[in-house]
Length: 132
Image 1 (tube, rainbow, N blue to C red):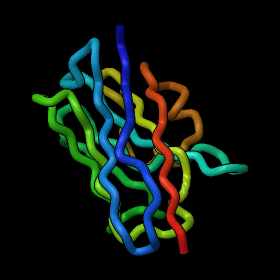
Image 2: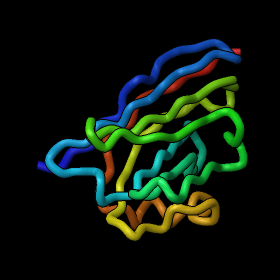
Image 3: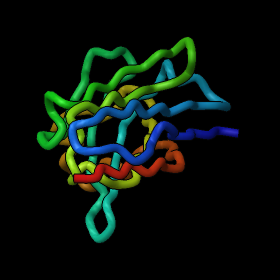
């Protein structure tokens, strides 16, 4: 069974850090682009970051550039999102999704609200709450 599970969320004060993990099971992530998305209450889902299967393309939403870092460890079948200098506006449910390569990972894709729906598999999210 193909599964993706995001974890690592929690409650943190503004300025703090969290590292999210996206663990895949039932398939190997080597052949997939991985994307991180978030959704805050009352707001549209937002593409946060993506990484291509070869790591040759990495993209971030403007709102997180310089603060978030995406990475992947294919040996562990896991992707990560290191989030530093967190702000209250980073609050939301963060989830991961994969797209078979060659995917559409790019800054333009992250800004396109159809990017998420074109992914091949989606995982359950993890709540991130940043207090001011």
